[in-house]
View 1 (cartoon, one colour):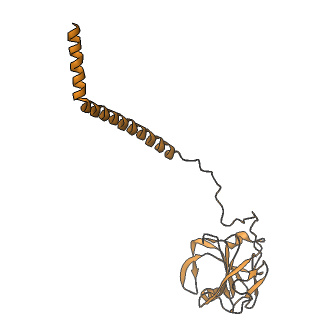
View 2 (cartoon, rainbow, N blue to C red):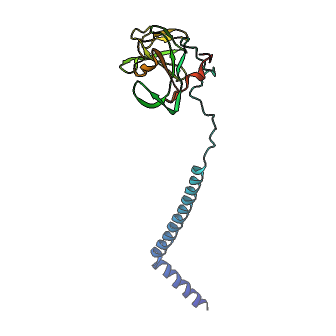
Length: 215
């Protein structure tokens, strides 16, 4: 029995010696496969966590919408009258108004106030002169930009204006005088064609900003 046991041990020892390289290769392959499997599992877990983190959105702070006609100092916008005169044209952006001079129907997005030729036209609100232009239809036109982004446009003025582009103007400053003719609105006689635009270029009714509605 003892001889048989020694013989078996000798055979096992010989088998190990003969196949040692193969056994080591198998062990290495198993170890590498195990490492690859563990690495892949950890990588998959990391990607899932990254997706979860990326998918979370920070709550956005809600802000109140701003009115383009609102002053940065929350000051109420109040216009003074450009001069005392009779209203000959009201703001109408949703209805058509007949223009006898041009013989056409169109909206009238301005406020028209009559005056004798040569009447001084005053700035209705503090601002800076953005442009001064002259055309056949609109006569001399002065555009004043205000700090809240609004613009006031004074059309049908005479060519001899009292301001220059870039000049700072205050409420009540004279910017020009009424022209002899109302050009594209000649049927109304000499008058001021006053437009108000907000910061987005939308035309507004000037009357809503006047300190006094007694025209």
